[in-house]
Length: 260
Ligand code: COA
Image 1: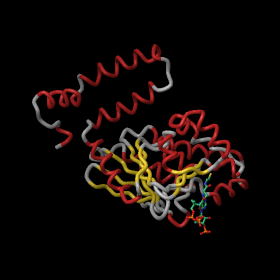
Image 2: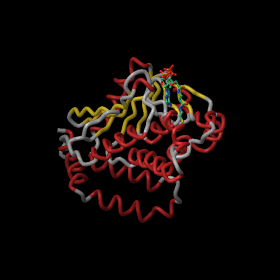
Image 3: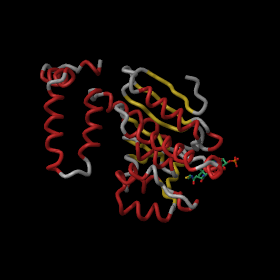
């Protein structure tokens, strides 16, 4: 597929996906949304790829929805608006439930939908100095489609402050509230991302996908309501080829086959 707004680089088990609209700080319009979603969706079936790194070309990670594009939406009917909003929602869901873990490489700015994209990723790493913000209310709109992912990461208390004020905040605060996992000097950003990637590559690929599914199923539910799920999950995976290989490898003091 010919890509205009996204760059994809595959290097062994690592796919690097770049938002590539630096002139508008990687703001996403309809084409960016569909290309990013298709790229991530297609990577599901590329067995050789085990980890995805998502970053932005130019000076910023992502300035959120393209405001020119959103402005133009006023001339569209409600059905068209619903269709475009659904496409955006599908993109975030594709990131959230990607069976391959996604490390976000965040720098410059991650605002509005850009901050939402960060929230939907598994392990966001940010450069100190990155500006974050759920700025929607300052534009007279709301952080609607990103809210499920952001609320899961930062909780209601922080969301009440940040969604309602639309204020900007920096990487250390983003780390404190759980939006990102690491805030490091910009010169250490790539090394920190690479370290996360390396750690992920030690894990069994199926186990990683199942661990993501486990978090999705179990978080926010009553313990008694997830008993059946967790029992079946471990019963199934421990007899799977990957589970057996991992345990055999440990006991035989050798590396499991997925690290070779
Ligand atoms: N949609 C469309 N265009 C955007 C944009 C967006 N979300 N964010 C930035 N741009 C455009 C600017 O209009 C500008 O275009 P121009 O060169 O034609 O004037 C260009 O990108 C560069 O922006 P600029 O503000 O000059 O760059 P900067 O590096 O100083 O600042 C940001 C970058 C991201 C901090 C700043 O552009 C910003 O705050 N953008 C708004 C982000 C926002 O609130 N998004 C929420 C959307 S819901």
